[in-house]
Figure: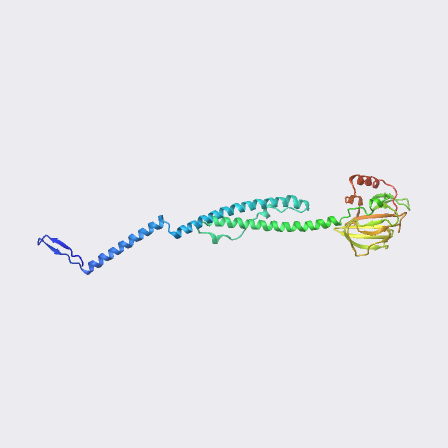
Length: 323
């Protein structure tokens, strides 16, 4: 049952019943609803500003977790940069120096990225600076790793070439020490045994009995094994690559054929006295880029320092050659 309200009428000195019109009821209801809505909005705004909802709590925890992971990632990137810097230093100062290669310039290793802003899509968010910084560091690190990877590929190729070069250079005596009677004549000006005139001797003469084994002094391919060159008699030529060719002259017989590949220490022939020769011996030459060079500079493979000094002493004596 609805409550009935009265008011006191001073004119009639009596209480009269309050009559509500429909328009007044509507106005009051509307005011109440508007006030309630405003109050509710204020309460929601207050709670949004100062009170975290369950979802906000979850999102905030995820954000804090992400920041923690970023800090760990940043430390790991710093460690990776430190390790990479050490590799770069060794690459320039050890590896490339050893293989006689130019170091990679610092500006090439640490060059930035030009052109448009690569990180524009990451801007405009609460943590954009953090995300952009991490992305930039990763990109720079990735580029440096790529440059270093290519450099190490080059070093591997240089090492392969160096290994092949070291195996190909004529580095031992063509006649073993126990089979060698003496080193008869060295490189340089000597007396011709036939004309007695002073003549440039372009190799070294090793005196040994006929039939003494002759060995390849480095890896290579036989380009000649014949007697078609004036004065050398039966001789062998080996192309070692890298500009090096060796010649073994006055042989009694061959143990290899033309185009045959040989390795350092392989038996290729036997000492003789064919061609323009005064006695059984091996005339041995080393040619580099077409020019005869002193073979004594290449005997680092099987001579001790004392033996090398003794050979150097004998080779420097200007006597008579055997061919």
